[in-house]
Image (cartoon, rainbow, N blue to C red; front, side, top):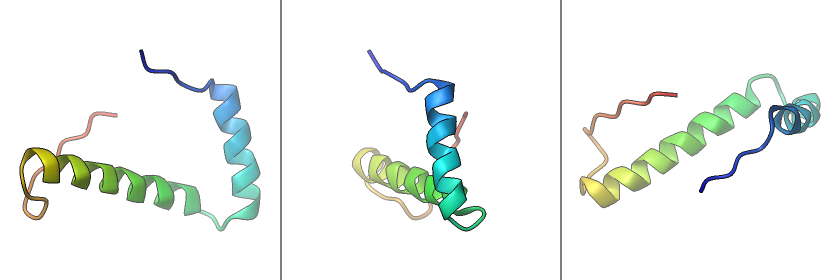
Length: 58
């Protein structure tokens, strides 16, 4: 079973970080983290990253 944080918990954490970071920094971090996770999966499953296609439904 996967667990998740409540919306209120996430928003509170984001609010605290957004007050200290430049605008857009959280989204940049999220995008970089997602790209790294996708690259790990592609390397493991497809044996390559460059030139691979990915579809995300979020």
